[in-house]
Image 1 (cartoon, rainbow, N blue to C red):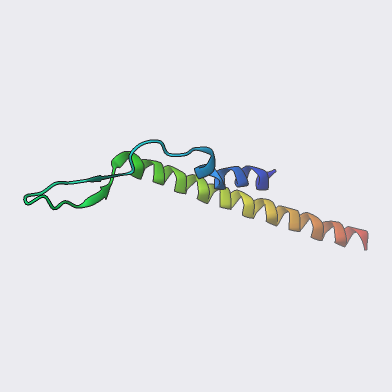
Image 2 (cartoon, rainbow, N blue to C red):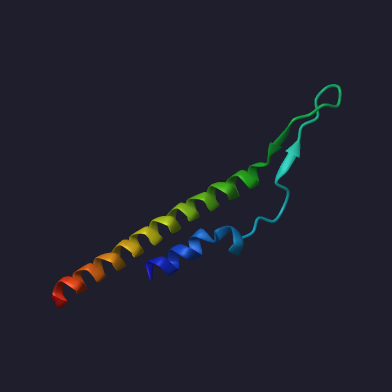
Length: 78
């Protein structure tokens, strides 16, 4: 179950796409500006990264529990 939940969190970017502008430009004297990420996009990126790390943790825990279960099952059957 952990692996299934983790896979959904890792796929956060596919499930919850960002809608809106990602970058903006500042205009300085002379018309030359710098491109920067917008605050809403930065917040979404933080949320996405947290969800993906949580998902990787769930997948790791689920996989370790499955391996432990197989190991214990093989010990008992001997």
